[in-house]
Length: 320
Image (cartoon, rainbow, N blue to C red; front, side):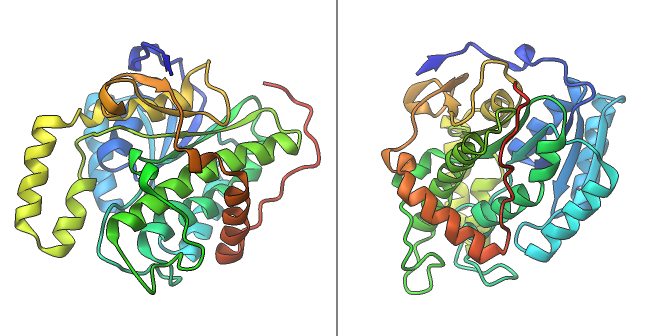
């Protein structure tokens, strides 16, 4: 584990950089957006609830009047809407320097996306897999180094990829499904970096990260959907006692997105007790997350399910 001592004050000037942040209207996404805007980036706030995102944009502009923020609708639970978002983005923007795959759902009762995927696997992994693949050309064609930073969770350590029941149709446990989706995030981030390297692409880096235990709205959504007032109360107490702030929880993603010392294929999380809180550091992920055969199978399955095939170049000579 490498202790970086890195904070928001360590971020470089991001003026002239375009960044997409999924789920930018709350929690970690809000803090990532706010920090990037403070350092000069143009932030595309890719959100399902654009009305709420516009309110959040106004809040940031009150603090940072010169912030360059662009709210755009993105529903990761609908492949057609993901394609619409990418078409609209590429029509307006020539560059994409960083893609922050941040949005997600956690430990919710079984639901399905518009395309019939189990919601957690569909949003957390397949939605971001499709989004990244459709934006690959933008990342490749942007001058200089570009990055894809995918938000996972420490819960990925309990995850396994159940290829016989990926969608939880035969048996469903909300935490097992969440763990599977978060393991898929890490497997995807590493496999993307390997495929870029194999294609001779050395100016696009793919990184995974996790926020530790950060106090956000994410923990509340499962109990809210279940109508469990007891679990909501327990989560409020746990967040108040044990969690670090969302601002601190955003640091690993910001480190992955902007730190000069980051390399592709790394995993970033808090450096404190049990990696639940603290400053960002490069650290190991679970043993299963390094299984290249599982990663390749997941990649092929994800292409089949989403209909998004990554078009990697044969070679690319530009260096970082």
